[in-house]
Image (tube, rainbow, N blue to C red):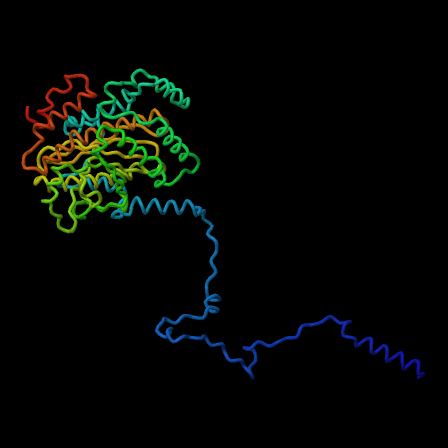
Length: 451
């Protein structure tokens, strides 16, 4: 073989053994668990001294492999927002004794002693509605119908600044009564009414806002505006009682949710109430004395109750709440009075749902407490409807001072004022919006008042 041939062979062999001409194969590294001869020690979990008393758990790696994989549910599910809203609604509406509002109402009706009954004004329930309930209803219904709610001297100037939705209604002849309207309160600033209505209409757009925002920016400002312009603004006080509880709890015949009534209109104590306060003692179960069934606003006797609901909440939810609340108040007043028997004056209740305001009236006798419902007294959808609410609030605040205060004084003094002074004041109150004298016949007899 020639030299040239040997060289060619060497070159050929070198080219065949070149590594880059072959595909690279990754090396096989044996796992520690496969190495039978030299097994790697298992990695120990470091346990601190303080962990010795804890329940041992499997290592995280084992838990991950042992867990059964979860398959997605084939059934349709609610969105997170709707589910959260539903849970919040259920918690607020039904946590009181785990009873729905309808069942709570049924429970109140089934009490053997002094049941609480809901009925319509026109229901024939054991006879006709009490006389004082009828007279209060008629007076409020006139205002709710927009009759005599305005008392502006410069009505033309007021109308010119109104939005189109209100211009025509403000000029209804029956809406203005300068002489009678100003007896129960002065006319509020139209700029303030417009501001409240615009805020409320803005809150009603789209998905809306929370109940707390409705309260702080719409309901409470309207309530304060009415109180500041009523005839007794110096002797009545509005309190926020959203966090109030019935105290002692024994006054409530059923459990209540955490939030019951939102606002109350109370009597500012006068010299007689202040003097009687020193002789008042706390009820068993509480260490703080109070005129009311709660220690909020304890020195101010409550006259008017206002329960609020968001526009998307159920009207039914508010009924058992305000019923249990009012029943507890009357039980508290009966302890001051010394007896549950005898006549009680009609008591107004207000439930507000978003824009809309409603009036209910409570009557009580020796057998039961009846809640008569309901009158739609107005709303914050327009300035005209808001003026109806203000007029009704003025009338109720006038009632609180001229009727409820003397009746309350009769509870805390030895000499009863109810049979003389209150009778005259109640008749004067009715005459404001009851021009027909025949409607007042038998008034003293029906209320048990002296002739």
